[in-house]
Amino acid sequence: MPEQTEIRTTERAAPLPPAPPASSDAAVIRDALGVGIAVGLSGFAFGVTSAGAGLSLLQTCALSLLVFTGASQLALVGALAAGGNPLTAAAGAFFLGARNAFYGLRLSAVLGYRATVKPFAAHWVLDETSAVALAQPDRRSARLGFTVTGLTLYVLWNLTTLAGALGAEALGDTETWGLDAAGPAVFLALLAPMLKDTVERVAAGLAVVLVMVTLPLLPTGVPVLVAALAAPAVLVVQGHRGQGTAQGPGADRADDHGSPARRPEGTPASRPATEEDRA
Image (cartoon, rainbow, N blue to C red; front, side, top):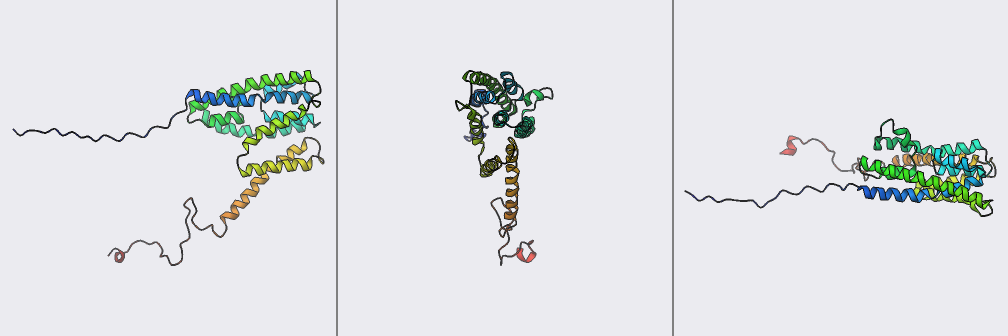
């Protein structure tokens, strides 16, 4: 009987590529706490500015508890402190806070909350909560980041608002201490990190120019509304420039994204192979 030889293969199946690592709960909570604490401390400046604008302690705390829009609150009390009309100041704050509605449209799909939860979650839709939630790789992490950031920011912002308002009352006239500039300074500190590209910087610069030009000419609070026109103006100019570039001399050449290029002269046109070509 012929001897049978056992043949074993030494080849092994190639290992599957590792799955992208999911964010751990600890990492998400750490990032959320960092953002919430850093921004929440700015509530102190709002409390000081609000008290300097003549709002009572109850009114100041009610704004943080019920409105809770950060930069919009600072814009409101800043306009009031400058002697602006309350309706004009409220209109400027409203337009500034309208951006949160666009955040909400995106977060609604990412977080996937039930209809009964959405009204409560909407109160925490801010720049910071949106940034943390949208940076997560899955829905569970997004919900955790959104909740921790929102809770931390809401609690700390309201506590520091109370502390700032009480401190301003104890100090007396805030202009004597130079604390009337705290609101605008914090507003600029919150805005500066968001200006990441040229278009945003140009829009912010144009808004500053509009305010400086119209401030001596228009009633208090109206220059803020005029400055809001900077963003659409820059976007319109950018759109016209983009169309001009697309219709320029090189528009029909191939670009980095694989657009069809004009065939150089002398190059034969693409055509199906004939029997003569195949021969």
